[in-house]
Length: 150
Image (cartoon, rainbow, N blue to C red):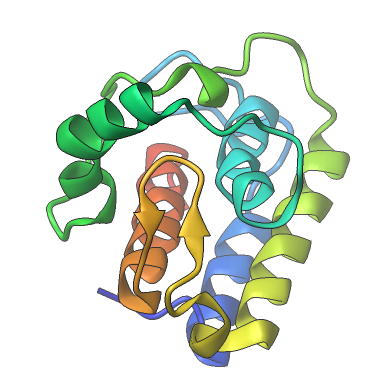
């Protein structure tokens, strides 16, 4: 697994994002490119913003049991795999706004480094190691950038 906290890896991911255009179409799935970037931004919003509610204890336990190994594990996502409700983007999004936000979040994560994320609490999964945060961020980005052919 690539390490999104390393400058060279973050730069490669940003280069892939910069190869997207408003006209880029997915190889699978229903999202438009701007919706995909907004969808990817949700993971960073949950890490950095006070925008999404923390699930209650029962729901959090259920999410940990059902999804943590998929989200934080090395096995790639399946095409068109179901996502959590907070990640569903149904309305139109502005391409440049979402692109700028996503690149900003990637740069912020890289600048903060893996040490910042060691033991940092995830809204859904509790405290995670920096390796788990890396896997969650990188695997998700790679999956969707691949979906859009970059």
